[in-house]
Length: 202
Image 1 (cartoon, rainbow, N blue to C red):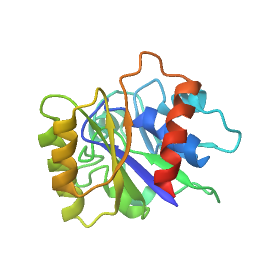
Image 2 (cartoon, helix red, strand yellow):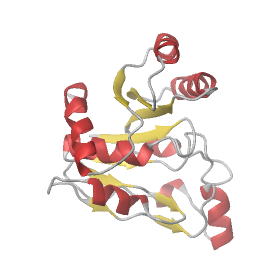
Image 3 (cartoon, rainbow, N blue to C red):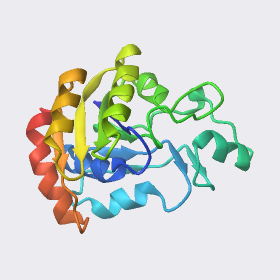
Image 4 (cartoon, helix red, strand yellow):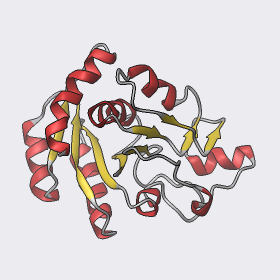
């Protein structure tokens, strides 16, 4: 099974959750487009405890921490969907997007188009900040309007019952996990959340 981890914006916790999902499923990890350093693949590798998951190499590593379409232009690179090929693996694969769902990777395609290309189930990461209801519902509306398969949603940050309840009501998505505001992110924390996530992924 392929899973595509996306978010309502940048710095929402996609990489942290991707590590949790890889640990829960002992799945491989792949970030097709990496814009800027440090590499998210290195972060995930350092957070995993199991010996089964493999880190698959990026298709594009861009020098500038920016929207992929802009970073690619600065590097003199053109990202085309047909040039992004799934890595060869018999394992489950966790694919991490770049930025939010509608970040452009070129002049015509958004990053979420990769989920459709690889027939991946989408997991949406939503931060709980002032304004996140609007951002989450807009993202969810786009995903459903494009008839993309959504496995569920992950809430990241201090609990906000009112926000979570209204988001789940209007999206119809299932909540897969709630990640607290962790002061330290390490292997032990990843394992803790992976254990919570396992039942929801069956």
